[in-house]
Structures are given as C-alpha cells and as structure tokens.
Amino acid sequence: MPWFLRHLRLVPLLLLATGVLIDFYTPPHFSPEAFYVAAPMTAAALLSLRATILAGIGACAADAASLTHFGFLDNSSGQGELATVATVSTFAVVVNRLMRYRDVRLQSAREIALAVQRAVLPRPPAAIGPLRIAVRYQAAVREAQIGGDLYGVQDTPYGVRCLVGDVRGKGMETVKTVDVVLGVFREAAEDEPTLTRVAARLERALLREGAGDARPEEFVTAVLAELPSSGDELRLVSRGHPPPLLRERRGRVRTLEPSEPSLPLCLGELSPGEAPTDTVRFPPGATLLLYTDGLTEAKDRTGTFFDPVAALTGEDFPGPDELLDTLLTDVGRHTGGRITDDMALLAITRGES
Image (cartoon, rainbow, N blue to C red; front, side):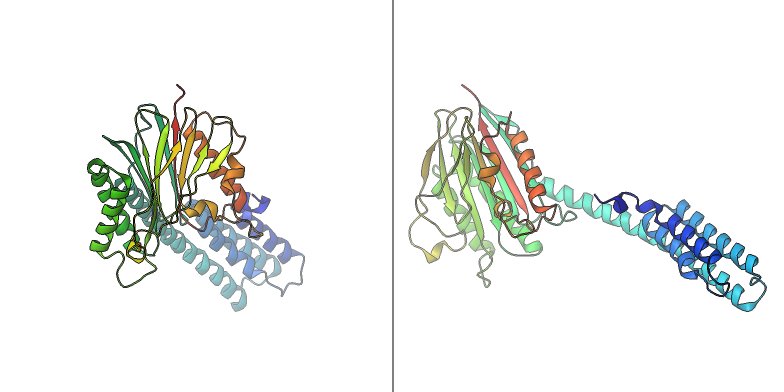
C-alpha cells in the first residue's frame, strides 16, 4: 500500500501546518483560509468525532492567531474569515456524525447480507467419510456478500453429490434463482438415481419458476459431481459450465472436459437428448476443484486471464482449505485486488488409503 494511504490520519494536521507556514511566509493580505477549512472537513471524513472537533478548534486557533499577528482580527474581513472557518468546523462535526450513521447502516446491511448468505449457502461439513470438503465464496461487491454463484454438497444413498453453478442475470432475481436451484438440488440428490435425472429436475423447476422466461440471457450454468462412498471413481455432468479440475497426488492438474458439450439449465429444450455422464478416476490423495467462471475470467492490468491450472500445478497442499486459500491469494495477486465477478469454489480431497 502506498505511503500516503497508510498515513491518511496525518492529512488534517499537515493541512493545518501548511496553512500556518503559508500564512507567516506570504504577504499579510494573502490568506490560506482554504487550508484551515479543509483540515476539519478532512478529519470529518477520515477520523473520529473527537479528532474532528480538535481539528476544528486547531483551525480556528491558527486562523485567529494569524489574524491577530497581522492586525486583521479587529476589522470586518478578518472577522468574516474567522467566522467562515468556525462555521465550516461546526459543519464538519455534523458531517462526521452523518458519516458515522451511514457506516453503522452499512455494517448492518453487511451483517444482514452475511446472514442471507449463510442461510442460502450453508457451509457443508468439513468431512464426509474419506472425503475432505472446503468451500469459498467471494462476491465481486464486498457489501453484497452474495450474488448469483452457488454451491451445494449433499450426502445421499448414492454417494456425496455436489453442485456448483452460476446464475446468469442481475439483481435480486438471481438470489431467488439460487434459492430455487439449491432447494431442488437437495431434494433431487436424495431421490434421483442418476445425475442426469437430478439435472432434469433442476431444469424443470427453473422453467416452472419462470427463471427461463422472457429473457434468454437468464440461465444457469452448472456442473454436478457424484462421489461414491467406495471405489476411486467420480461421475460428472456439465451443463454449459467451466470444466472441473482434478489435482492428482503428485501435483499434476488435469482439466475434466465433458465428452459432449451441453447447454445450460433453462436452455435444454433447444438441444435434444440428455447431457452425458462422464466417469473419471479419483484416486486417494487427489483433489477435485469445482468453480465458477469468476476464477478463470479474473484479469490482470494487461488483460491476461488467471490460469488456475498453472497456479495449482506442482504445489503441495495439506488439504482442500489450504488449496482454496492459496488459489484466492493468487487470484488477488494476479488482479491487484480488482475482482469483477463473483467466485464460488468447492474443493474435495479423497483421503489417503
């Protein structure tokens, strides 16, 4: 962080000091009134109520001392200048209180948004049988806490079933769609014998709720994974979603492209047939990473996209939590902290046999 950003609290003091120096080293009729009024207003934006009051008192005292030194305190122009500084200092206190009220409301909104996120996207258990599970959600707008990306994990009679998806659209309607998708997924994952039938249930529910009506740009990309409790295989169904990554024990990373491309949920009627179910070997020590396109579309200043395969190749991670933390750190470093799209990440590691 640049030096001046780390020392913003010193700005009101520097303004006062600069005003005093200009006042005493320039002709008597030149007034640095702008510096005196800027000091309390800057304190109002950056500092506490006490600091704002002190900055206002300091500005009035410095201006009064200068006017007295040059013999202007007794005339109308000097008194008018001092009155201006005092008025702005008083107004700075009001501004400070208004900003404090705004901050309290913003914090309350953040807490409500976080509660909504926890209700809509509950954190899955850290382990189910031999599987260790970790999730991360990073919203592009920090105050929002939640957007159109989603994840779900369900322990079912068919094994552990997972879902990561991305609702394409804007506004609160996306959160409503997220709620519909996750609700139907939890029910269908328990009932349906195959992932293709789970995907079909999701499609029917979305069309029934109107998520695909009127605006064709509103659809849901999703990838479903099924990890049986025994064996070393996993099954995948992709509906227009970025392909999962499989990190093997020795640090090699593979992209699990679907055998056939499929359209997103809500658009399945445009293409006949079901999305294929692909079976992939998932040996002990391997990690499956499901993610939304906020990860792969994160760009640096030159427009270069982030490459999660390169970021994970050759690295050694004790578990899925460490993998996701490292990945998010690398994304932040790549983008310079400028996240422009939400990211939902789900990592599952099969324990060593």
